[in-house]
Image (cartoon, rainbow, N blue to C red; front, side, top):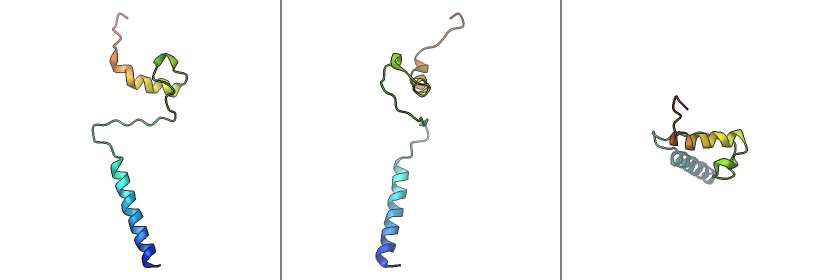
Length: 69
């Protein structure tokens, strides 16, 4: 293996670890993976279960349902 190839492999490895560390959120961040993007930020336009899950996570803490309705 040539010296150039070894240097390229080492640089790629170093860059790869830097990118992984840059994308790691802090300890208090909750990350939820979804298979779709939201088509609009208007809750009345929700058309799929995945979008409903996203809006549920966004808006669930904005209201509270009491025992008497």
